[in-house]
Length: 211
Image (cartoon, rainbow, N blue to C red; front, side):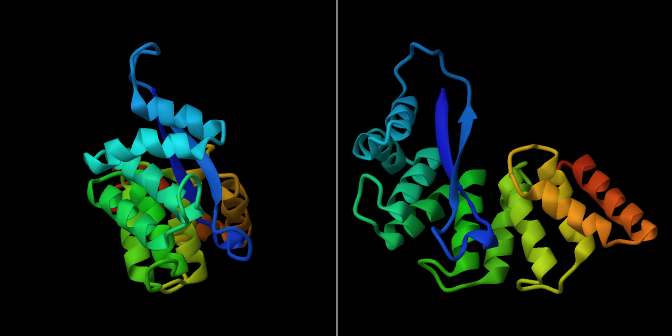
């Protein structure tokens, strides 16, 4: 069993801690097979962060994108290591470039918040879009926020609804349903149909090239 951690980037969390921590589990290894990724996950869940770093760091150095994502989050939060935003950006950038939807979403969050990198909404949207194209619900929600609030783009309720609705379908992001329903309630029947059709079309093309 492989365990990965991700920051779910939301604007509502700006005043407090950067973001809330959630878990994503990928099954695939036999329960009794040696697995440093799983070992690191167990240590993380027990709040033994130094042991989690010891398990994940060799994998990250070898280029494992999930381990790179996890290590980036630990550096971001200062868990098991000295807090180092530059190292967090480095590991998350490696993870994102290697194609991890987790790393892409988390790196997008850093660009949107301007944490460790200059705030850059287009880059944030680029990474969120890459992550969403892989079915990452948190990235879909983050795109919805950007479209709703007009961050680096014109505020656009149709695309905001589309991404909120697609995120809500996965039942992984707490606020997705509330944001989807709030936008729905402000739309005319014609607009509701258009937004719903856009969501269906995007899903039909596996979340890729959604316009």
